[in-house]
Length: 279
Image (cartoon, rainbow, N blue to C red):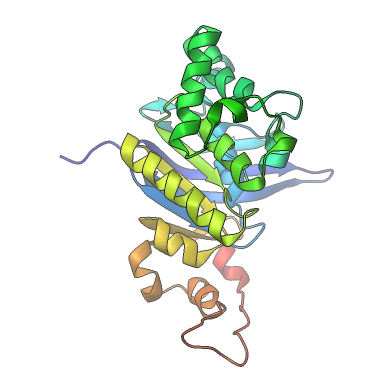
């Protein structure tokens, strides 16, 4: 018997009001996510992050979010009262944001920020939360976690800041992680270290991961499945290992526009777009 997916989304639509009309940013997006790594790929403005924030219900109050189904572990995220939604955010569903410089609180120490999650959601005493935070920093391969706990965000490097962010999001042992461009602000060597840590934690804890990225090669090597978005819609869904055999012209265009060390080209292909793909 097939397992119930952690997250099931059917016909998700997100619309933002403007001065004169309602503007759809995401239209009729559907997918299931189990205890696996699913990547969402697309250009800036394709609706990737909008989907992630809609699942967390983090959009401004005037945003119109509709879906036939948006269920997490059997709970309807669209109809949950805000109080119950707050209990899910950061506890059962966690979101790792793009750049720790803008995501971490500059006036709280690293240790305070990591411990805050389990103090709020699990009602742990501060001493027990501090111990748990140090253990979490050790899991993300930070040396001398006791010293790092006392630092403020501006005192840590970009790679260490992203590890702190991962610690903060995973300390409450969520079932689902939404990672929104978690490595885009990092150099290549640090990126690989952070991805290895994320893979180790997700696989070891049997979590689901929704990985939002622009990087096709990264998603191909890191994820199990890939959703390709264009103009607010999912135009193709494919196993990451089969990405080279993608059929949709938009996905083919993205692949052909990639530079290659093994097959260098004098001129990279220019991505051609068809408005009908987003219709």
